[in-house]
Figure 1 (cartoon, rainbow, N blue to C red):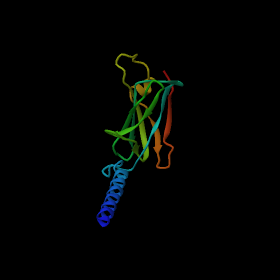
Figure 2 (figure 1 turned 90 degrees about the vertical axis):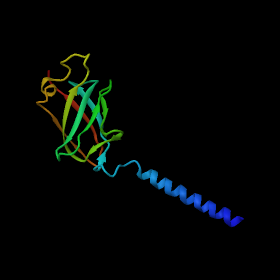
Figure 3 (figure 1 turned 60 degrees about the vertical axis):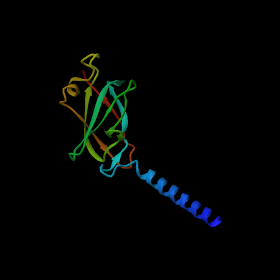
Figure 4 (figure 1 turned 180 degrees about the horizontal axis):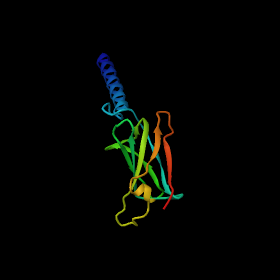
Length: 137
């Protein structure tokens, strides 16, 4: 009887270890390139701006990541679905103001009409926290 209980205990322990290891690997989708968490803020002439869509477009031609600023101008990038982050490497960064009920001239003209962008380098080491202060009228 004790042998059966001890075999059952070992079996349960092994199952728990396997489930634990699997859960640790489940956070990263192997179909995605290597990603890093990216956060930051967008301001216009030093003031935070809400409802600005920010896009990190990899210069390598990979999949773009995007985010939306909150009332404090803060954003967190999503790669796709519920996966956060951006591909490693240099990115072209563009901005679009997305509040249909807000004033049309929130972003300086050169950013609003997509004639200007900024650059950012996403690294594995981080920190990948960027503040973009869009200057102009």
